[in-house]
Image (cartoon, rainbow, N blue to C red):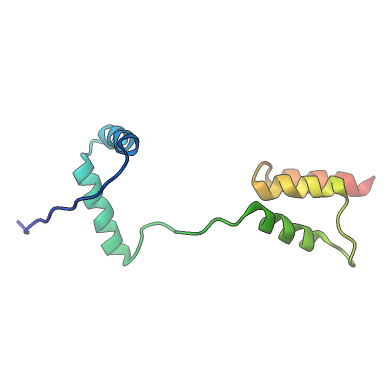
Length: 106
């Protein structure tokens, strides 16, 4: 058997408690879950999931409005409300498209 090492880390009580409960339901100890994570890091040669910095809502909204601007004319306030809902993820693409079509057909 390979020689093992000890890893020490500090986490909040609440995070550890919640994670322990999840690991238990999965049939794992916290040590086994950490070993799985470290193994996945090695196998992926990096993090086993995507790390991103979330954009601020204003950036998404400004981009969406700039895309919706036609011939220098920005979308109506009503259309901007729909764009804002879509950029926040409150409505899906199809709903936003349907709503915008209704706005511009009237």
